[in-house]
Amino acid sequence: MFNKILIANRGEIALRIIRTCKEMGIKTVAIYSKADAESLHVRFADEAVCIGPAASSESYLNIPRIMAAVEITNADAIHPGYGFLAENANFAEICRQSGVKFIGPTPEMINKMGDKVTAKETMIKAGVPVVPGSDGLLKDVKQGIKIANQIGYPVILKATAGGGGKGMRIVNKDDEFEEAWDSARKEAKASFTNDGIYVEKYVVEPRHIEFQIVGDQFGNVCHLSERDCSIQRRHQKLVEESPSPFMTPELREKMGEAAIKAGKSINYEGVGTIEFLVDKFRNFYFMEMNTRIQVEHPVTEEVIDHDLIKEQIKVAAGIPISGKNYFPTMHAMECRINAEDVMKDFRPSPGKITSFHSAKGHGVRVDTHVYAGYTVPPYYDSMIAKLICKAQTREDCIKKMQRALDEFVIEGIKTTIPFHKALMKDEAFKAGDFNTGFMNTFDMDNCKE
Ligand code: ADP
Image (cartoon, rainbow, N blue to C red; front, side, top):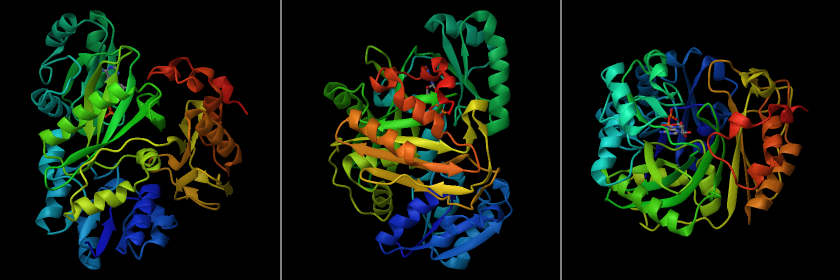
């Protein structure tokens, strides 16, 4: 087992990883930017190293500085968390060459799945259903229009390097193609310095259902059931839950099998997520694979009662997994609490938190790095807390979430709590009747307090 793990991340996930390391008797090193000196992950780690100024390029994305921190502290492994360098094959390769264990898959696996076009090709070969679309990248508008007519409108243009909902455009007819193509390419270039675009059928009113998988160094891959992440705004998740209200035992069996096939096709090692779109007829299509721990992993932890960060560390240390699949025994739901003003189009709302009272009680979990007096910096992701509730049934879980949201007080900045309160009262949501288009018709006036 590792002696000391450096956590190449910040915020709630850094703290989350430190907690598990402590329980496993592993020492921890936090790295931080000057803007994060007051963050809890810095205080809770055994050692902390300031690696640069606020800008991510000068700190959390700066590989030479992170490797210098590894050297100074003598850490023998790096946990990348999510975001930042978590899916950067070059970083994983540098770790390998420096003799530090990257807690995650190999650079080869990251490369295979990081590029969406390559990932789709790999899945087709493995016999996993994918959304019909172009064979690889599009050359130009003309070719795009031709393929769009073959598969039928609506279609979606997607960036091969895509992430965080960026570089995607829906196209309904030939006339709209060129403009969508130009803006998708521009956004992809700016966000990923890669403007490769492909096209696929736009699945109408789908659910986003993903499977958590774990693979070890001995070729075993198992699944830990699904999470439903259909409540999204601009392709970004707001609420996740497990089990999916749309799931049936037969569908879980089929999708779980496909997820394992996907993992086995690249000998996947570590925890990962296979994302699928599911249409109203319960046809499912592979969308992409995330080769890291995800924001919403606590939902799975709660329903199967396992620590996924611990699994990740054990697998990285060469310990085999049991090889059996896990199924939900409870219902869990996560609300992402962001420092955003929901009444102003979810505009970021950084600043000082003047008072903070966390929700508590039976079945309530809060993962956060903030506290009263903490200043939310404007430089990073706006998520400041995750509120996770679990109960025997979905209905009870929603009631618990309502109670927990009422208890949660964050003052000084705007947060997404008013949105979550309104969502938990929404009849369609309560009935489990929703898809990824839910937010297009949701009345934001319900969030007025
Ligand atoms: P990212 O990596 O940027 O998050 P994804 O490929 O995971 O992008 O897609 C994000 C979301 O975009 C999905 O959850 C879904 O709501 C929507 N989406 C992506 N592809 C399609 C498609 N072919 N049809 C319908 N919706 C799609």
